[in-house]
Amino acid sequence: MRPVPEPRFSPRFDPPLHDDTPRPTSGGPAHRPSLGDLAELVRAPAALSVVGDSLAGLAAARAGTPTALRGRHALLPVASACLYLGGMALNDYADRHLDATERPERPIPSGRVTPRGALLVGTALTAGGIAAAGAAGGRRALAVAVPLAACVWTYDLVAKEHPTGPFVMAACRGLDVLLGATPGHLRSALPAAAGLAAHTLGVTVLSRGEVHGTTAGIAGGVAVGTLAGAAAAAATAPAAGSVTTGRRSAVRWTTVAAAGAYAATCLPAQVRAAATPTAANARTATRSGIQAMVPLQATWAARSGGLGTAALLAGVAAVGYGLRLLGRARGAAGVSIT
Image (cartoon, rainbow, N blue to C red):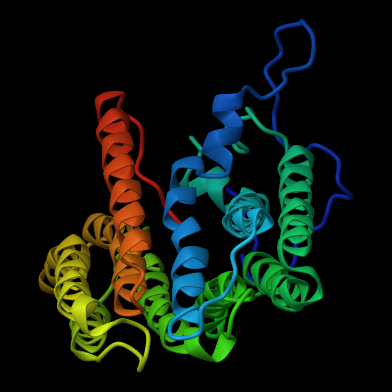
C-alpha cells in the first residue's frame, strides 16, 4: 500500500537534513547536481518575472519627487531575484514527498538534487537577497527585505495549502514592489504594489488546480480580476507632477498599450480555464499569469512616468518569450509556482 503524502502546509525539516531521496547506484562518485539541475530547481527563467517588481516600485516612488539614483540601487532587482529563486528551491524542498508521487520528474524526487542541497540553495539565496538589499538601501531596504524573506519562507514551509496561502504569496509580491521603492517614497508605490499583489493572488489561487483541476467560479473570478486590474491601471491618471504636460500623452498611451498587453497575455487562458476547468487548463492559465507579470509591471511603471523602465521591461518580456520558445523546442516543461 502506497504511503499517503505528507501535507504540504506542515513545516518539513525531518529527517534532520540528511538525504532521503534514492540515488543512482552506479558505484561511482556521489552525484553532484549540474547547473541545469539547479536552474530547474529554482525555475531560473521565471526570475525575469520578478526583477520588474523593483523597477516598477522605483519608478512609482520617484514619480513627482525626483530621487537621485546611485549605482548601488541596481542591487535591488538582484535582491528581488535572489529571494524569488530561493523561494522556488524552498518550494521543492517542502514539496519533496508530494512531488515523489505527483511530479517525480522534478530535481529532488528524480535524485538529481538532494533535499539537503535544495534547502542549502534556498537558504543561501535568501541570505544573498537580504544582503543585496542591505547594500542597496541600508536599513530602509532591510526593513522591507526581511519581512519579504519571512513571507517567502512562511508560504513555502507553512501556508501553501492553508487558506491564507494565496494572501501570503500576494504579500510577497507587494513587498517586492515596495523593496524597489525604498530609495524614494514608499507611499507613492502603494498602488503599484496593490496591483501586483492582486494579480498574484489570482494566479496563486489558480495554481492550486494544476494537478486536480480548478473550478469555473475560481477561473472566472480571476479573469474578472484581470480585466479590473488592467482597467484600473489604464484609466487612472498619472500622479500629479509625475510627468510634464508634453509627456502626458505619451505616458497615457504607453500605459494603455502595456495594460492591453497584460490582459492579452493571461486573459484568454483564464477564460478557457473558466469554460473548461481541467488541470491542464489551470496549468496553462497559471503559466500565462506568471508571464503577464512583466507587462503588468510595465503598466505601473509607465503610469508613473517611467517610460524608460517600461521600454526595458518590454525587452525583458521579449527575452522571456524567446526563452520559452527555446524551452518548447527542447521539450522542457513550463514553469510552475507550486
